[in-house]
Length: 484
Image (cartoon, rainbow, N blue to C red; front, side, top):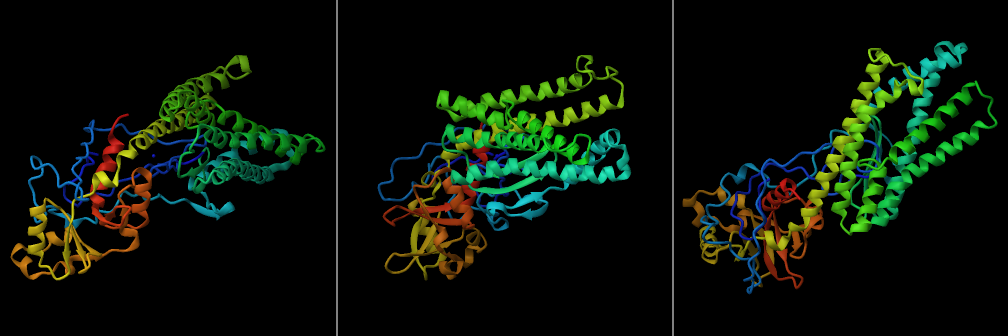
């Protein structure tokens, strides 16, 4: 499974305070959620969907009067505050760019095949214990002479089965790396594994291949275990283990080929619809709703099939086995349903990410020299309709950015005696942002060098303005909350 998962509105001359709570990015799977493009999409197990609380308004169009190479100062009818009074309370927030949520912990690190960390989540131990207990009970009927040793054999089966799941996930990982898609990690967890691929495939063909290689490897493993059974005598420990691994890998392959998100078959269906319509969002919607229908089918149909007289099962709906089957079906259906919803949420976010444009969100800035008093710098900024200050040398080369939170912290009566250089942050290479950046590329650039403000420059090197991380954060929340 690959991973890919508010109310601010993108506009120039934003006048909102710099202080905002940190915003989660597309969700990281786990089964959880990731930063744009971080969502569990290529395994049999997914995550949840959160509808927006309020339908956000459409982004304000960008004014066209950029003749002086600076972003406009905003609409006077709406922007009443000057730079001297903007950002009240900003000193209590770092104003960091949107970041992915802190991961709850990947579990135990088992290794780094192909440079990708593989973690075993705590939930795996619960499943391993369950498999050991259930398979041990079956072994008691087939090989009663094993006695208590059957549980040791069952534990070996559980580990070997999840090693097969790891091979399935490694197939997704190798394909993603082949297509130059970064993979954050692989996690083995309850009901299978997750490959957290951070970006989407660029074409439906690559999407199809990326999804198909996992079930294909599971089918190949089932075939290899079947071949390995040939020279082994039935009714022995090796024979039973090989038969169990063959059947389990066959089930994994068939289940993942079911055509609904977040399963691999759902990714394949998405790729087909994307190819036909030319719209990845249409493919996601179709595959997600098929996934939800599949979840309902699992919830209702799986217990009935297991206890149907047609399949030789026990029709007693009050038995403990029936209750257990219903519980497992409910858990599996919930995972599929929420995974399908999360895929829809992430697709909606990706659809709106291009609205995050550095050029649109940048604040107008005025250049000031290092020894300029803060009061004078603010007077110039307010006269120009600007809301940011860039400290420059006598040749006009930008040196640092005056922090909005620092301005708010200086009492008005002291501003004539405070030089702007004392409130500025030196401009590092990571704090120079191209005005042409937008969407995921913009977010990746800001995350690579966390700061509260960034210098936005034209391709010619000319200063375009200052980008506040708080403005990007608000626009990011807006994109997440907005319906498609």
